[in-house]
Image (cartoon, rainbow, N blue to C red; front, top):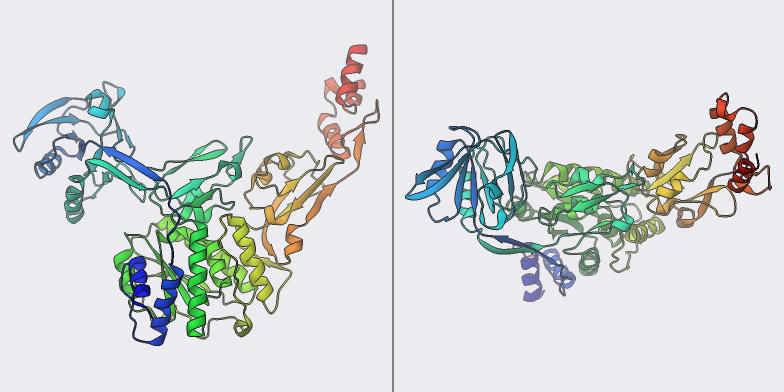
Length: 564
């Protein structure tokens, strides 16, 4: 084992792994080989702060904290008590004149260098920065002393501090705010491709998985698409792992770099140690202390893998890791992991385990593990692999950026290596794999579902009334189900194991076209005419020849109206 490999591993992980046994040396050598080269850089998000701090809270507390910050030139107090709402006065604090505005803010929005605080003055909402003519038209930093902070997101915006009565947290916040003047940058963690987003179409609501799991409230809905506020995004990654289409993708490191590094690491360890490794994903700066202690006690065959944040690795990465030859996966969470990230990881682990169990792997091949638990019981050892491990041939496909392409490559390889393969594997409801089922008795082939499908899973036919379906393209977003006026569509999450069957175009419903009574040109379906006759029967406008006009194409209908 080279010293260079050990150094690369330590830099990547943030701590030193032991190198006493042959397995420990093989692990370090594998990490050194896997981490060779640099990851693709991402663009940067910039913050500019003049250091203007707003301290929000009861007047005595706010003034006391302000006195502890004598080096901050731009400091003001928003006192939630002790004065008439909307009133402004100046107080002497530690030899400084400090403006005090009375009133509890109605709302706070923004991030470091660009906070907007809304107050009510004389019954009218006013922006604090504009009312006080602050330079830059914004508050740069907010220290919220209220027991119930005004911003309630799991991950608070950069530049916003809310100790919630914790004196230790207050001390840390006071230290932090004094260094937040100047220019700052962070990576742009997430990229968004609106063209393949399944959030909505034509006013119909569809997928909202990313919105449900973002702990920083960095995502908002914009009708049929979403908006990513990159300044609020702190790279937790659960949005990209939950996104069924890949419209949201993690950028640092990107999917290609992550897959290539993992593939090389697993292959090197397997070759050196002559056994399959286990992979332990852990993440982020906030989780590091607890996780590092936990990982110092892991067995020698477990390779720790540091993500930017633990939520950034999801189903396509996990399935690829197993396809590359790993025995099992542990995803480590801590007391600091946002609840939304943990819940999302648990749901996705159930989905991936359902696929793997259907192919003969243990039902807990992917485990979500609290890093505070005892380490010994969390690892499968020699008994956690499928019966076919001795004959298992690891995948060699390189990193791919397209999420669905990675999923397909991993699934096809795992199916090809399984000893007993069922025709289909039932999956938990909501898994982004499955079929669309159509009730032919209700469907009128109006093609509304085709118009909203974001993934090209539901297709029409220009030659005849025919609705067809490509199962692999379906992400179970629900847009078609929510659009159907006849309530004829339902979803069924499953994995069809035969690749060709997943990819083929199959007919969901078709019927003979209805031909115009005037010119004999096909223009709609038999069921559509029948449905219209049922709904309009007895209506005075469609008595006599009125009903007959429904059976004319557009051209003949216009012609007959002008001739009559």
